[in-house]
Each structure stands twice: as C-alpha cells, then as structure tokens.
Image (cartoon, rainbow, N blue to C red):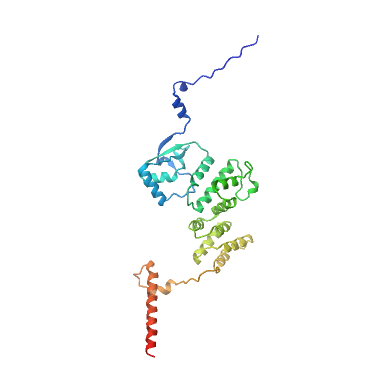
Amino acid sequence: MAKKKSLEIPLASIDDLFSTQQQREDNGREKIVDLRLDEISDFPNHPFHVSMDNEMERLVESIKQNGVLVPALVRPKESGGYEMIAGHRRKFASGLAGREEIPCIVRTLSDDESTIIMVDSNMQRENLLPSEKAFAFKMKLEAMKRQGMRTDLTSVQVGQKLNGKTSREILAEEVGESQGQVRRYIRLTYLIPELLKRVDEGKMAMNPAVEISYIPKALQEELLNAMEMEDCTASDAQAKKMRKLLDMNKLSGDSILAIMQEEKPNQKEKIVLREERISKFIPPNIPLKGREEYIIKALEYYAKAQEKQRQTKTLTR
C-alpha cells in the first residue's frame, strides 16, 4: 500500500505572528536615521575637495534655514561608527551651520560598491577640477576591475568585455568623456602634487601635463625647480622633447633646465631687476608689495626731468 505524501505547511515565526503588516514592510525598507557628525568618518582617499567656496556658503545657509533636505549615504564600520559614502559636503556644511547631526541612509556595502557610488554621486557636480576627475576615474576603474569587469589602465586590449564593451568604454559613457580622455585624466595621477596643482590652477595645459606624467618623479622635481627658476611653464613641444629624451635614456636635470630655458614662439621678453642692484635706491620703509609702484613713479619722475632738460636745451640754442 502506497504511503500518502505529507503536506508540509510553512509555519510563521513568533515575530511574524505578533507583528503588523506595516512593521514587516518597514523591516525590508531602508530607514533614514539621524547620526552625529562625529560618528561619521570620511571616505578613505576621497578625491573630491571639500572647501569653503560660494556653493558651500549657499549650502550652509540652506541648511540653517531648512535643514539637510537630501539624506547622506553611509555604511557601518566593523570598528564602530560609520563611513561617509555620499554627502561629504552636506556633512561639512552641517558642521558650519551649527548642527550636530545629519540625516543618513545606512546601507551595508562592499569597498568596491562604496567606491563606485561615491564617485557617481560626485560626478554630477559642476566645475570639477582635473585632479578630482583624475583620481575619481582611476578609483572607479580599479573598483570595476576588482568586481570582474577587467580592464588595464594602460592597455585596453586585455580588458574583459561586458556585453561587448570594456569597462573603460562603460566608464567613458557614464562620465560623458571619450576613452582617450579618460586615459589622459588617469595619467594625471602620476604627476607630483605641485605639478598637478598647476594643472588645477590652469597654469599648465592638459597635453604637456600628460606627457610629463611619464617622467619619473625625481625628474619631475627637477622640472618643477626649472619652471620656478625660469618663471615659466612647460609647453607641449617642450614636454614632448623631454619625453623623447626620456625614451632615449638621456633625460637629466641639466637637459630639463636647458629645454626650459629655450625661448618659446611668441614669448615676450622679460625684464629682470636684481634685488642687490635696486635695493639701495628704495627707502627701507617701502614694503615689498609697494616697490613696483615706487619704481614706476621714479621712472615717471626721471622721464619728466629728461623732457624738461631737452626743452631747456632747445630754448638756449
């Protein structure tokens, strides 16, 4: 005689039996909680600058009047406390606005998930600096690599494809740049900080900066010294000349200085006044910033005296 199959009926847990439908829905939903600012640490190596600019001043005033309208995103740390993923500027502004807490969404995320979300949340901002884009692109691309979307920062050919596209192609599409431009930005991360700062300040163009990024850091220091000594910046042609010498194993501090001393096309002649020659003519009470004006007035006085002398000679002839 065949055995009858028993019917297995899933039994609800005690918690389910004594919880409401609203409570069960809330358990599966992310909640917004108020966290103390001192509980939240910044994201490691956060590439985006948080500074007191006009936008920050407006954000501080907005938080004073209306509070933080968009919650920050944090993840819990194993050591306790939380790590900021998206909301560094809101946290900074909240502190300036005199607030001790900030509304946050707490989410458990891996390192790579956190990196990608952190970069994506900041790429929407306007007027990002070249250095911010450079390190952000590099961090996200490396996170994508670790997640399995293999790419190589210097060779696209080895990139494992996802839906027929390499991770660099995907990244380029997401940030609205060409693949080549993404690669060029990432190259900026190989510059020493002082040269990268010049790129951010607009004192060095992108093309020569990319060429210089291939030069070893010790020689980049030599280049920085030469630029400061000559009060100039490297042109694209000069950077390519240095890169060519590097490929030939002939680049040195002396050759860098010689290249930087070359006269560029359309370069204006500069007048250099040596301190030891002019200091004896300038009263010691004249501040350094006022010396230029003092010299200009002295030259104007000299020019008037010369003109008066010429007129006197003409009248006595």
